[in-house]
Image (tube, rainbow, N blue to C red):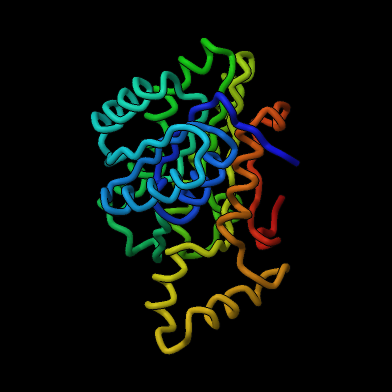
Length: 260
């Protein structure tokens, strides 16, 4: 299926690396104007150059700490002013954080909620009025399969992402009369820089290729997913091709999740 996002403008938080970078590339290839948002200017600059190499529209890179409400407002105003509108919002910021429950401090809980839940609340609050006025919008909230089926040691991420799924459902109902569609992507094991960091921490004696193969053996599909495969689903949900899908939480996990 050929997906076109021509005439659409997208913000992707956490857009400089991993799945965010892959989504930015896929959206840009599909003719969208794309604004990538991240804290690291160096990573933003490198990814912006890569996205511009395949882009058919405009590309922006905006440094922003999405745990800061004022910074989010400034970022949104900058992007909205430059691109003219925001049609697509992808709330992707945040990496995995997990520990035994009794070891998690209030500070760790707050930091996780700030980057994964409150950042999405604030960006959605800014994006939805314009989407509703134009009667077209797409919001994708990135979650994890652990949000649906949390296990021991899965906090704080499983909890903050589960709250993000509830936010998704609420917004989908409020946005539906205005053709603002809101969905979540529940992430399984995808090859990103997080896998690289986990490899260095857990199995430094093993090659990264062998580590990735080992990690994938336990999955029903027998391998980890590629960020590009993830981006394909995001691009579909952000397009007119997905015009009857809202309030859904789609597993992208190679069959890992025990629940639908």
